[in-house]
Image (cartoon, rainbow, N blue to C red; front, side):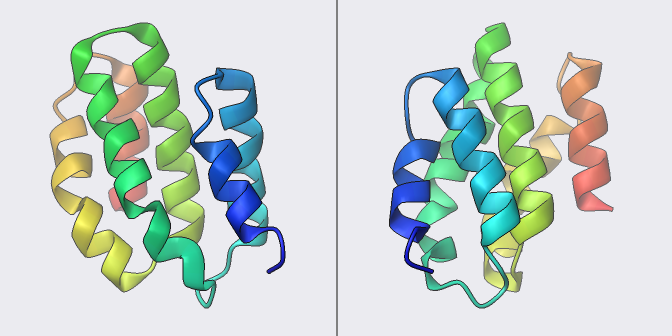
Length: 105
């Protein structure tokens, strides 16, 4: 799509409000055949690992990433993100545990 790179840029924004819009756009606009999904792998890993620090911002950003992953996942992306998602099933926040388990299902 013509907006794929712009979507990834908004997803990597430091502001939560922008990040939320970017993840929504990716969830709605990316398909299994979108080439730039592979470019999001490191961004998604960073977001999922950011929840480990314990800050609530990291928890909500990881929640956005999990929602996006559940909508755009490909076989390669699933293999790359499996360790991070399985680690989140042991997170102290029930919000993230629930989202991670549902994403793995």
